[in-house]
Structures are given as C-alpha cells and as structure tokens.
Image (cartoon, rainbow, N blue to C red; front, side):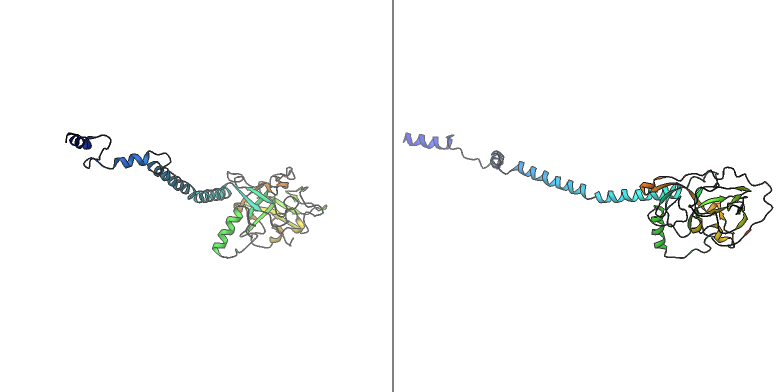
Length: 294
C-alpha cells in the first residue's frame, strides 16, 4: 500500500515527465524550435526573401526612368543647340560651288551671328550668309508648315541644306561705294581703285557682265568667288532693288569651316580691299546703271 502510494505521489510531480500547463502554453516552444536548427526555414529565411524582393524592386525602379532621363537630356541638348544656333553661331551646309575654291560643295560652315550685333557692319571682303527674300528671291514659296519647321530645325543644326532664300556670297561693295566692271585689264574697281581678287576660281574673270553701280546706304553688293558659276547681285541688276542686299538681311559672317575634318579651318580674311578708300562724303556723281546676267 505504501509503495503504491509513493508511486502514485511521485508520478505527477516527477521532473522526468513534465506535462504542459494548458494555462501557460502559448506555443512558444514551436517558435524556439523553428529558429533553432541552422539552415531550417523560419524567420531568418523570411527576412532574406523579403530583402531579395526589395532589391529587385529597387533595381527595376532604377531601370524604369532611365530612358526618360536619356530622352530629357537629349531634348535639352537639342534645345540648347537650337538656341545657340539662333543667337550665337549657326551651321550651314554649302549646297553649290558658287563660292569655290573658298567654300566647296558639302562643306559645313559655322556662321558667326554676333559679328554684326553690336554696331559693326559687313566690310568689303567678308563672306556672309544672308536672307535673299526681297532681293534675290522676290516671292517666298508657300509650303507645309510642319515640314517647314522640321526642315528649319535640321538646317539650324547643319543637318540639311539651307532654305532656298539663304545665300552665301562675298561682300564687294558697301553703302556708298561705286563698283565698276571692268577696267582695261578686266579688273573690278571700287571707288576708283583696282582690286586684285586672289580668292577667285583659277581661270575665272572678275565678271563677264559689265556694270557700273553705286551701292545705296544700308545695302551690299555681293558676288560669288566662282564668278562663272555664281548667281549673285549681277543677276538682279534689273530687278527691284537692283541686286542690292539689305544689311538687316545678313544672318552673319562665315568664320569657320567645321566639316569635313580635313577642311577644318577658318575662312581666311582677304586684304584685297585694304587700299580702297571710303566713298566721298557727297556721294558719287554717277548714278546706278548696268544690266545683264551672270
């Protein structure tokens, strides 16, 4: 009896066989067990999985706007170049040989738009780009406005030929000058001084068309260096304006050849007109006259 009693009392209180207390058992043992074995799935695995998902999201977020940034940077560059070409320096593509050998077909020149912005005016011998509307071209051709805007933007960047109203020529006479062709040796005279023109295409004469004109104030008399292939002021002697180009139609001075690389250089200044005097204060007594086509 005593033995049985002792056994009965020892059973529930024995530490060898502990029993869970329902009142305090909250499942904490399962949490401890799941985190204890190394390599077993549990809380740490969940954290790692979450970090990997987060990294993928961050990487995707980094890739997402990259094309937008590239597009914005490209658009900003184009706008900057357009503003630069509008106010400072504009590239022009040379489409014809009227200015050979100084400028050749396919050359891309950079026109200095600041050359005449601060009170300066074109001088004899300058190579200038100008808008020939109203002088060389009497009527502007109407066209598709959208196509025109695209072409103008491409031309402003030097990627397309200039408008048909844009010309590049050399200034031979400025306001008040009397320009005559030709003397007994076939040379042009400006204000009575014979001009040697070293920039002409070899074999070309200064002009096959005789003329004797006085350049009105605020205008220019311009000619190409390849005289036999140039349509210039001589072609418009009988037109309104007499072939003169208004100074305010000048876009700028051609200062650099920037393409192709083999021709990368400045447009050389000439001293051909250094000895030409200023026109007389009272003006020349001979009025404008002349005709013909060159």
